[in-house]
View 1 (cartoon, rainbow, N blue to C red):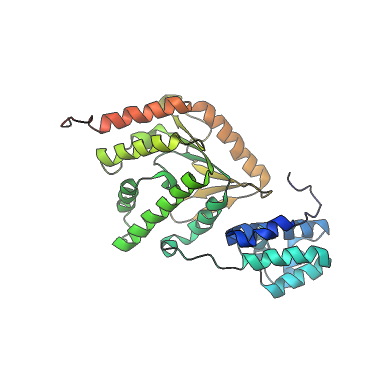
View 2: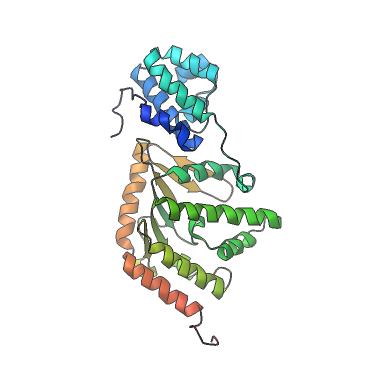
Length: 309
């Protein structure tokens, strides 16, 4: 259940005990931010007043409360004093803060990910459910290595071979997480993404076959919006919504060529949720969608034992 407005949510012992479970620091940053936000609201303080006490900008307080950044011990003490937090309230919050300041285990691909993408990458790993609409290409989380390389090579930004390898590895890591974790994914693709031949017929055919395999997983739902559907609720607006298993609010991620933004305001997120629901009614059902994938793949790949067209 979401927190009621004006009430302070108590950080549970179970959440703090996640410290030894290998959970990402991103989890603790978000929980810490929510705990501080709830505490601040419960005592009638504003983000502006908190910023004045810390002698920082209100933007920094917002980033702390949405889990973008951790908070230093000295800053946390000042805020908890300002909010009049009791010892009982302070202890679990201080433990969350300690865990939030831990460094993530380095990965081979971390340094090649764009700065604007890293937050989404971390949040995607801890999301319980991903709702995604993609209009033109297969999303990175579901790409084959050859398809990913073809897309990267199409970008005029020159990259060293090692950088390309690590970018491809990052996409494969995201796919492995989807397969191994049981994270729920509901993907709606436009038919344009299915029929745009990326990397040549063989690469595209193999990509479509991989999509069919992933669509067969219990935790994955794949639908295709056919060209015949015409205009629909998400026309020209690809987006990703992340939902979380705890009481953290869902977020919507929007990406452009050189930057990205996250939408967390509940009223705005609700609009995307409504659009996604409408979008699924414009799309083919899962069975019809996989049939379409199979048909297009059959047009691209020669039948086994044949010499091709």
